[in-house]
Structure formats: C-alpha cells, structure tokens
Length: 277
Image 1 (cartoon, rainbow, N blue to C red):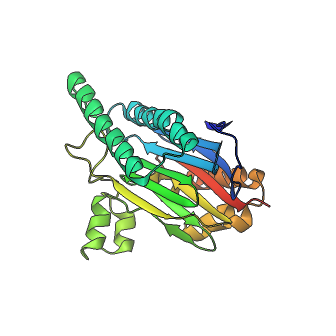
Image 2 (cartoon, rainbow, N blue to C red):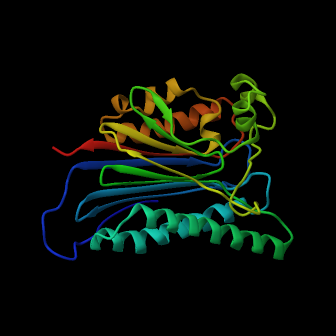
C-alpha cells in the first residue's frame, strides 16, 4: 500500500520543499504459483526539512515454506520503524546515518532470529530477501539482502545493489559469464536471506538523489525476462511525465514479463523525483 501523510513540525518554521516524490507499484502472482510471496510498502511524507520517501520489497523464498509470511513480517518491522522512529527523528531533527544503519541492521538481525526460531519450532524453513530505500534531504540510503534489486533510472538503468546469489558470485570470480548466469538453473540460489541463514550481513549503500530520476525496486521475477532498455522505455523519467504513465509502465512491464512465461511472482515499485517549482 502507498501511504501518504504529513508529519507536523514540532516547532513552527520554514519547511523545505526541494524535492517532490511520486510513487507507483504493481504486484502480480504470476502465471504458475498459487500464492504471491512478494510483499511491499511505500511511504511518502512531509517533514520540517522537506519530503521523505521510503520503499521496500521483500521476496519470500519460493522454494521454502511460508515465504509469504516471512516477507510480510519483515515489511511490518520496517514500516513500524519508519512510522515511529524515523518520523520522530525527522520531526525533532535527530536523524543520523549512524542511527539509521544501527536501526536497519537490528531489524534484519531480530527478524532473522525470529523467523528462524519460528521455522525450527514448526519444522520448516522460511526466508525472504530485503531491498529498501530511504530518500531524505537529498540523499538515498539502501539496505539489501538477497537478489531483489534497486535501480536508478535516468537515461540509463543503473543497478545500485549487488545480487547476493551463487551465479553473481561465480561471475565476480570469473568462473561464469553474464550470459551463462542468465540461463543457469542455479540463478535463484541465494547466498543469504533473512530467516534461513545462520548469519546475515546486509549491504548498506548511500548516495546523492538525482533530480528527474526514477528509483525502481523489484523482485527478481520482474527483471529476468525484460531488458534494461525496455525498463527505461516504459519507466524512465522521460517516459513517465505523470503518475498515470508511471502506473501504466509498471503494469505494462508486468504483463510483458508474464507473456514471456516468467514463472515467479512479479513485483515492482517506482519512486520518481522532481524538483519542486
């Protein structure tokens, strides 16, 4: 669900209005699976120092029991952090990168333990990827586990995250080519995920937000059957002057992926940045 609401400043003063955010998303069970194990959330708020946007995708493990439960539980944990801790920090002006890193890492570790314990108690395994982005005061912050992705779309599609998969590691080590990785049957084998790994070491990234760009988060089912050029053509900033085009692009590419016989769940979130006039 996309949630938009306003955080009232604790003290009166000038509000920053440097960046506008618009968001859209689409999620689909796909052509073969009986449940949609992907989960997502989006927040766009006003703060005393300008707008903030938060988006997260979790892809429950298709080969593991209760993947949909794992993805939803992690989404809930991150949304609770945003709705309570981040909102309070934004209002009081106490936000810091160090606290963000600690908060996000703590959520990952607590949920990994919680889901692992739940699985052990019920004799099955469950797990999920996590890819989340916070956009605030001109910077983006990303936490990432697994093979969901975050892209920065301008004239090109730049992948901001690194896939934590067996084939990605083999490509990085020079033991497999990109072309071989795309068709390897092990392409969805994860090196770690939240809930089914003894130890989880999230990737944390930070960068400057670009104006007139689109930040795209997706589960791996969204990207396997389409090219980066097709993503730019339908969801790049030039193709999405309004939110209607943004939504259309999400749905169009989802249907294109299904027509090309992708068997996984398919989920995409887009957050577009524009300078406020």
